[in-house]
Image (tube, rainbow, N blue to C red; front, side, top):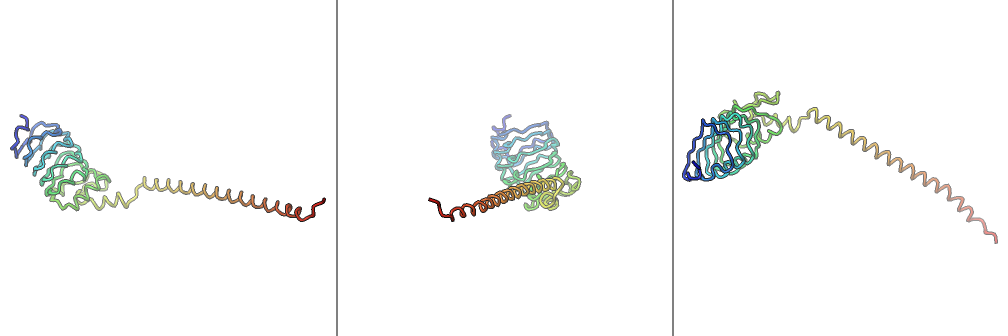
Length: 227
């Protein structure tokens, strides 16, 4: 059945099926949809504009789709009424904080059971979790699996240590980069100093030759000219 024919639909439960993909404008006709449950499927892909017409959606459940490895930053761009979002056990490793900028009414967010990679690209999202004051009922179970020094840390609390690692802390690559930059600056300074010294020597040599030639000319000018 085409969903476009169900214009008054407000509740749609699609859990425990074999859905693999949700494509753009799948829900084009169900503008009044408030509740959508896509949990316990085999989702591997949600196209960026799959929920673009669901401006009235309040609750969305995507949990228990272990092969859903990523979400586009435009996935929730138009779901501005969303209050409840469940992303448990989806296989997500990272999230772009830009995906949540439109969710100004979001109140409850579930994130546990995912292999979160808490690297520098994850920093903005962890800061979002701190400043947004969302309700995280499962925050103690939503933990980092990488890097080793942050394994087991709740992602809602990892913002400050991750900020230290990514902004104020220098690793081996940073030191190598600084060493390379220092060597380049030193080499450039040495070459510039050598060129300046060469120019100074040439200038002094030219002045000395000019001063040596000047007395002879002036002495010849002092004798009376023979007629």
